[in-house]
Every structure is written in C-alpha cells, then in structure tokens.
Image (cartoon, rainbow, N blue to C red):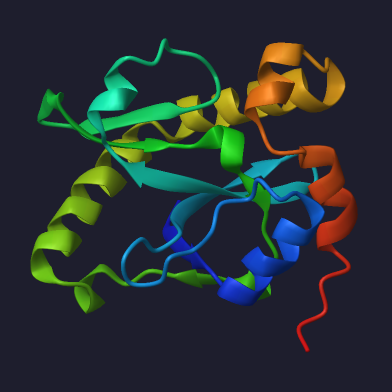
Length: 161
C-alpha cells in the first residue's frame, strides 16, 4: 500500500458524476490517499489531517482514524472512506516522501507506518462500507457517502483530452 495523489482533471470529471467528490486544492490541500481494491475496482480513499471535530465523531465505517504507532494518543489523520472514488491507474501519481518538505515527509511517514500496520483492517472496513452503500442501501451510510455505483458506471468513460 502506497500514498498517491489524484490528478486534477480526473477529479473534475468525477465531480460531474457526483458533485460531492472533494476538490483538490493543489499545494494548500493536496488530494492524498491510498488505493484499495473493492470487488473489481480500485478505489482511491483520501486522507485528511486530524482536526478536533474528528474526536467528536462516533466510530463508524465511513472513516478510519490514523494515529502515531508509537503513541496512539497522537492523532494524525483520518481516511475518508465515505469519499473514496474509483481510481484509474493513469490518474494517480505515487507520492515520493523525499520530494516533500522534511516536516511534511516525516508526518507522511508516520501516517504510512500506521496505515501499513492496519492495512487488512482498513480494507475490510472499506469493503463493508461499500456493501452497506451499494448492496444493502442502508440510509445512514448512503447519506454519508459518495454515490459509489454511479462513479463506477462513469469513471471508465474518462477520456483525458
């Protein structure tokens, strides 16, 4: 499992399918995430820096908390599984931590280590969320998530012009 950036033009295309797809704010807030395989599709699941508001969220399948492996009280980020999008291999770019600012690279490395050590749990949680949204159509999860089915129907039609 690696960290990736999603390309701007592809994000814009996906927003045409589901307007709730998150924007990429370039250098200020890059769209960084991991890629998970769910069924026949690869999904890009974005990360978000930890915010105090995340502490008030009741644990559920829409997100996964990322902590420091050596100090689990140090909350680093969340993986926004509710905002995962189908990923074309041509529209993701692998992140090279050494190309980032040293302080940011260090944070990314901590997040990466925690995610790697919980890879199986994250993948199972994402698959469970997908099933609750697409197959079981459980209203709480449908309301909290992107339209995975519509995104799957449309993303393969992306044609980079």
